[in-house]
Amino acid sequence: MPTLEERLQALEDREAIRALIARYGPLADSGDAAGVAALWTGDGSYAVHGFADAVGREAVAGLIEGTYHQQLMADGCAHVLGPVAIDLAGSSATARGHSLVLRWTGSQFEVLRVAANRWHLARGADGWQVTRRENALLQGDAAARALLAE
Image 1: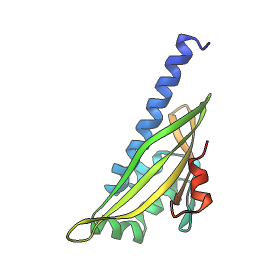
Image 2 (image 1 turned 60 degrees about the horizontal axis):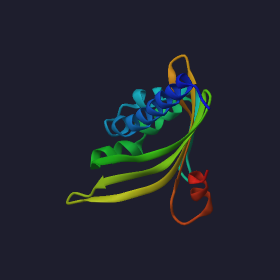
Image 3 (image 1 turned 90 degrees about the horizontal axis):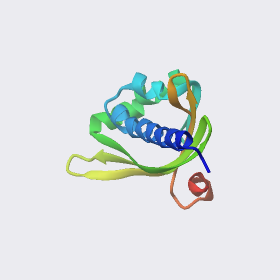
Image 4 (image 1 turned 90 degrees about the vertical axis):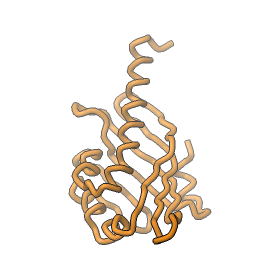
């Protein structure tokens, strides 16, 4: 049976991971590329299947600074991340969940993307950070479903 201290640490770790993931959407929607990049480790990566595989903070920031994302913000958008299932293993963790990207069309919002996400995280001196995020559209293929599997 885990000790009280171990149980408390697990709760604090899960809450810190949830808070980190929850920060992504507002940072992305406000165009804070440096803030988004700071969620990742220096050598962390963000793989958006079929779009980009950004490695390192500069490349992750480049996704926000890039033409596609800038146009999305100009149109009006919202990155919405759902609750995540978190598996802890000491100072590393995996979180699985869904994300939606909504875009304003001028008269209403439309769903632009519905994706599966798998976040790989590590706890270091600065707290929890993303080492890798994988994101794939849920279009019926096994690869996207695999991101959600235990």
